[in-house]
Image (cartoon, rainbow, N blue to C red; front, side, top):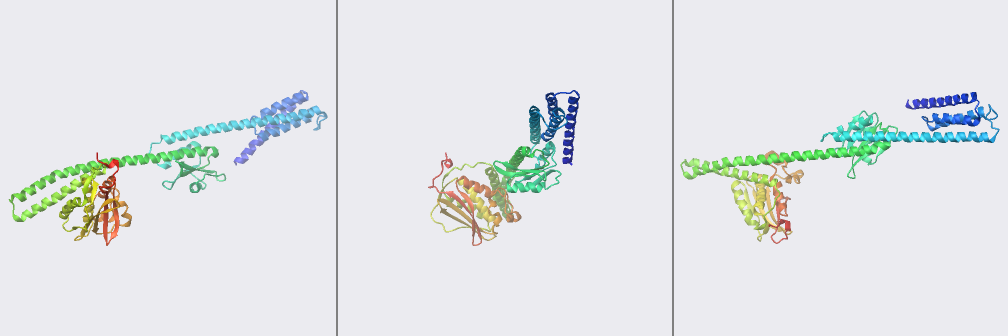
Length: 488
């Protein structure tokens, strides 16, 4: 339909030009102008006609004007023959000049139209950029497409986001816009489908393809599509950055509230626990209660003391979780350090046997005794908590590759393969632990943080004789210590 309309308009302009030539012919013939004067009149008529015609249309009118000049004003009159050379030159000059003028006119008009189109495109691109950056982040990716559709009047816009592998659409696509957009991302190359009226551009961020955007019905696509793709890439990346920043801010706020809550709860627990311990101890020592109640008072005192230790450790773990650790390094004998924790956990877990493997020579490590003691306590606590009743928790001390090692083995449910790497993550607890044993998922994370602050690590060992083992590694006293780790 559009092609037929354009053809009719072109035919009307040619007919109009023929009418102008006919009018000029009647005027010149009626006024009996000579050949040169008539040629000037025809030249003016062709120039006026070429103001809004294409070059082929103006060329047809030029030929008609030259033919009319030859037929009506050159000897012999009313004939297309030429008797004098000068008149032939006049005819040739008229044809050449009119063709040159019409060609210049059509080229100037095309350049002016192209310039106008470019200006309109730039204004539309600027409008799109304003609308995109006026959106309050974080926004949904699909909402980024509407400014493209409204500003350029396209039938549909499709965006494929490589980060989420999702396709977003705005408008009504009648062709295979979604398929072509996805295919463009897969191939990594921009593509044009003239038969479908589709153009697809890849989106690039930091020299990497991050998606693709396709347009259906975009005018002047070769010029407009690349800047629109650049705008889309910037807008998508901006949305991602704001989302990440918002998530990080929310996590930080949550962490601050969690730490404050832990501090408040730990301190609130300590005051009544101290009162319970004092009262139970007073009742037991004073001897003012029946002998059968003395055992109950001792149980209250023991359990209150245990709860106090748990509260203290919880509070300490919360502080270490959010602090940058700066160990106070000093030479410490590992066996002596571990014996202190051994006695305490033997009392807290009477149905577990804490034993030492065959020991060798003394192992001196350069550590912060308080921090490493806390990390070791966490390993023993986990070993007791997740081992079977009436089994042994085995502790081995040794050296490996210029590192002192403390290994804790226990017999209990094996750690699932999917959990082996994640158990050191913050707040993560294995599937078995979540179902059967209370905890925060913070202990191993903080323990590894302490070990790495010393230049060491905590690793999960391969199972041995149905036992699970964790090994704490710290530098030996005679190992070279980086200046950043030395105590001032």
